[in-house]
Image (cartoon, rainbow over all chains, first blue to last red; front, top):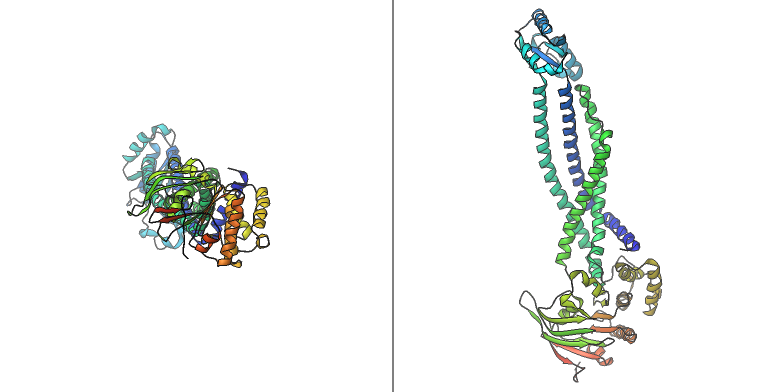
Length: 295
Length: 228
């Protein structure tokens, strides 16, 4: 194809996008939502994986004591924990301290829960000397009288994995449904453009335009919808992610993956996905139209 | 230039539009095609333009066997043709220059050649002063001359005019056929479908009459008399 033709066709594609702006806007909206949800599910999954890894690498855990133990009895249990082989340190954390901390973070939600109303147990934070003897040490502590339960890494890991699986499978179906809706709307948007330009298309065909010459402006329109959606969704996703991680980090001591470190891959993935969706949506309607008007 | 050998065309709904048509139009001929509505004239033109394919028989246009032509080769067949429509089919948002240039852009002509060729064709058809007018600012006759300019601009070997005078007054009809005659004198084959018998009488050209899908008269082989 000649450069002059290509320039002309690209210009026509941009014109299509603008002339049909309402439908183009709808397509961009739906495709953007689809990309944002895909990105959100992906970011969630990446953060969970990173949290899982940090849990697995951790050489500490929390020992929860029975609710009916007094502070003095609790300190005695702590002595027994300290005496267990492989325990490096063991620090007491009373339920009154715990409730005060939660109150500082979440305020009114914890009002009136002090004293006997306090639902939290006394706990010990235990650090190990040798991580390879993790399970053996846990089993020993579990046998000490007054110990209610231990929040060990396998439990946390299991919960995180369950959450990750749930979000991934839900995210997958939402993305599939939104993907189909995006394709439908993009192909309809381009269909509307094609019908509004049917006179030009019929003249093009009568003077000997090839199918690709007829198709290119509409493909350009689809690709532009894809690229604009990709850029919009990256901007929105980064904004939502930053706001959300900042709020979460204020409540839970969780280190999230910085958006900037993922920006390159997300941009590439989103733009490729946007272009693919745009081209696919465009080609569905073009093929249908040209088949109908074949000749 | 145009050859039909035992061509039949039946549509899916069972209508037999053309029955065993045999025809030969030489290069440089000017042919009027007449016939009542539903006689098969449109099917005849659609077969030439390869908008339809025959049910049986063979069509050869400018050396190309249309029954063997692949879909991707159809545009190149049409580049040898200039089509003039009864309803002009001008793009309302484009001015005269752009309407004519559009046909050149579609076949990949470069901008420099377009800038040279379009004014030349517009001058040839007496439209030089109207180059930057929009279709709604032109009379029916002028619009059809723009349609003719668009058909002519790519130097076609054959011009197919489907009732080009159907929407213009008799004086303008006469002018349009005169223009087609002028183009024909330069060697372009002209195929014109018409209902206007005064034009057929005024311009003594080959006349083919189609009725119920059959060629019932061809002035190349017999004398035809029309009553208006």
